Amino acid sequence: MDEAIRSALVGALGEAAVLIDEEARNGRRYDQWAVKHLRDWRGEAIAAPGCVVRPATAADVQKIVRIAAERGVPLIPFGLGSGVCGGIEPAPDAILLDLRAMDRVREIDEHNLLASFDAGLNGMLAEEAVAARGLTIGHWPQSIAISSVGGWVSTRASGQFSTAYGNIEDIVYAVEAVLPDGTLVTLGKAPRAAAGPDLRQLLMGAEGTMGVITGVTLRLRRQPERRDFTTFFADDMAQGFEAQRRIVQSGWLPPVMRQYDGREVRRLFRDHDRGGKPMLLMVHEGPGARVEAELAAVSQIAEAAGLSAGDPSVGRTWIEHRNHVPSWRDMFERGIIADTVEISGKWTEITAIYNDAVATLNEVNGVINASAHSSHVYGSGINLYFSFAAHFEDSAKMEATYFECWRRIMEATARHGGGIAHHHGVGRVRKPYLVRDLGEDGIALLRRVKQALDPAGIMNPGNLIPDA
Ligand SMILES: Cc1cc2nc3c(=O)[nH]c(=O)nc-3n(C[C@H](O)[C@H](O)[C@H](O)COP(=O)(O)OP(=O)(O)OC[C@H]3O[C@@H](n4cnc5c(N)ncnc54)[C@H](O)[C@@H]3O)c2cc1C
Image 1: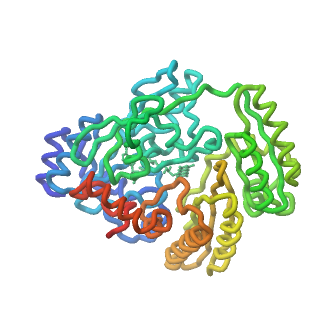
Image 2 (image 1 turned 60 degrees about the vertical axis):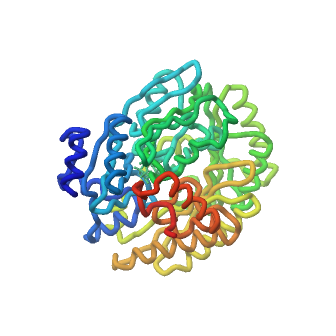
Image 3 (image 1 turned 180 degrees about the horizontal axis):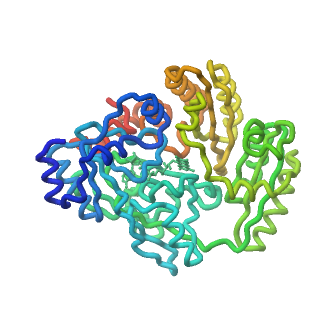
């Protein structure tokens, strides 16, 4: 790192907030993207940032951004590093902006059901702070304990209870951010506004390319009075999707609706396997009377669609174990490269996407698993969360297979009209496919927005936005 830049940072924030030791820099070289873990595990070189800075306040972030802007130095915001698409790829001359020390609960407003947090706060700590008052954010990504509230907004995250409670864009009330010229803005002022374009959206899903989110105000809800579970089995995925369509289009909204294909039932719920049939698991929450009515209604709809009831305790088991995932390294040691890929599609598209993607993945040399479940449901359609795994004796073959599996899922999705990214964001891995969602003109518009906000191109360069 250029000594003049380091001195400027130290002058602005103090010595303790500017880290240049190898341990700090190496610990911030990448996120949870499988490819970077694979390369590191194989001993390949991965660049570290020039320094790591740890702001404590939005004013600190402004100082850092101004130093970077004046000198044209790349700046990479880092929440808690749980992103899975390669959003963190610092060059050796970059400043890595580690938001972990910005971890305050700023305010919990029980009357208006709002809570404000520093952007670097761990999501589980945010949830626990409101839960202590009988409230909930209702946003439960599987990574809740390893991701930050600012990271949620930056990646347009989804929680497991999204079908009723919405995705992060439905939960965000206000966003405080430092723009690439150092200006501090707070966007979002009222429960709803027709005050021009919704500028919060410039930051939502921007993955660090448009500014640094420093604070987030989220809408809250009161904790539900009752929770219950149902489980059903379908003859095939199409029949299960049809049952889900009828349930949500009838106005019922179980917060959790998850439909696993037969392979996933065998892998994740072995004791409940019914000869490889897909399984639909639902969690019902809310006022007791509504839950009671919903249980009766969804059973009737599911059975009318041809599904048969299973053991409702599966849902309880899922709730207890839902956030456990094996580490990348454990898999590499076993000769396995794997990943999960989420997409979405309209009801009329989703079965074709599922069938096509699974079939094409199974043709890839080395693939030992190609499966999917759905987990987020809308009136117009549903998501799919594909899992693939390939086995190789020679780890040198893993990376090419990884990218080939991704390519096949992205193209199968786009071929049938689906959207290539449901909730993990774009990062590096989806960047080549973003055009399938936005079109060339949409990409050009995105570049123009970026150019207007960040003319020097300092904010997370190379991430998300395809090169011109
Ligand atoms: C096991 C596991 C399970 C997961 N489950 C889910 C899930 O259920 N739902 C889901 O949506 N995602 C899930 N994810 C993905 C990930 O947790 C989310 O994308 C999360 O929102 C990232 O938050 P973070 O704080 O870790 O961000 P980081 O990984 O640190 O950063 C992600 C991107 O956002 C940018 N960024 C981070 N903070 C800021 C900020 N304050 N200002 C500007 N830019 C910023 C970074 O530059 C980067 O490009 C999962 C990941 C893992 C590893």
